[in-house]
Image 1 (cartoon, rainbow, N blue to C red):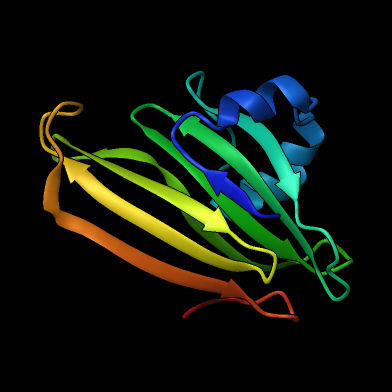
Image 2: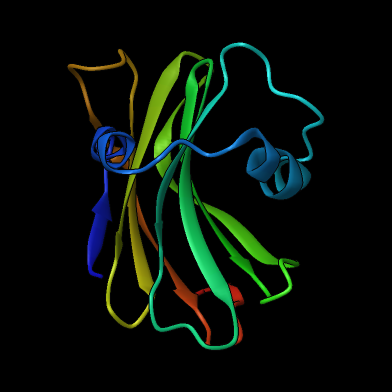
Length: 146
């Protein structure tokens, strides 16, 4: 910490980290995502875990689907039970509009998310769609809106 998650940050994690095993995806990610099996377009890249957590485990992964790319933050008990899950950054297409969100996580586990839309996908950004959200990870692993 601190860390910034942007549109291309997953490339660094993909080079530095080992791929997630099928067993980890099946046992931890699929139940969270409510997915039985992924299609051929879905990919997961492990990003990082958050250090110095005593009452929970916090991990971030990147999930790529067709026209939807997201960084997911999930917190678990030490027994592997899900506490919370939030999409904290990514790129998605809704009704032909590209929506991008970047996230910054500081040392106090506070997350600032900046989000905005581009009606043409790349060259035009609509500032009226810009918004900032704040989340925080509590000492018990709950992810709350600030």
